[in-house]
Length: 170
Image (cartoon, rainbow, N blue to C red; front, side, top):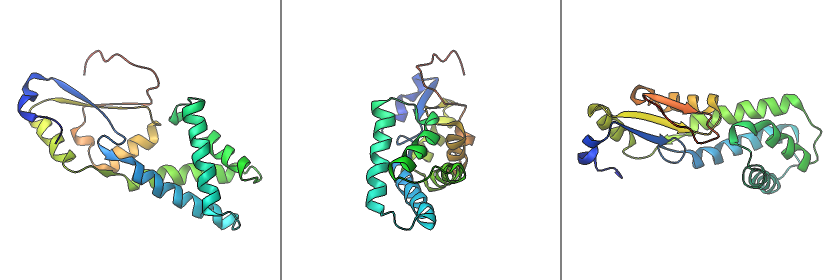
């Protein structure tokens, strides 16, 4: 464990990011993208996985790194751009379904890192407030917290944060 729980008596609260801090989101993202690809293949069987992944990675990079779009606001743009790059007719129903499928798969494929639940239990025993801070979209992060069954340890979830925020009290 990264925290020295013996020194935690000095703290009143601790803030965690959800993605890749408390849980393995990267593996869940890869699984979700594969499921979305399989969905697309049902309608567009000629699209190769390699082409899809190359385009997906490029668009993700362009939207999040180059254009600095917050993840919570870019899903529709992301799928629109994938359709455009794959030279597919824009289909609102497919994009809606892909957003839903991705969100559902992501929340169901995420896993807690080893010893995280035990650490959360120990923090609660010591009456240390636990806050989850995330810049992700609310529905996805709430579904992840629910699936991971860690909501019982969390005192406050701040989801959909795009700018630094000052916590007044919890």
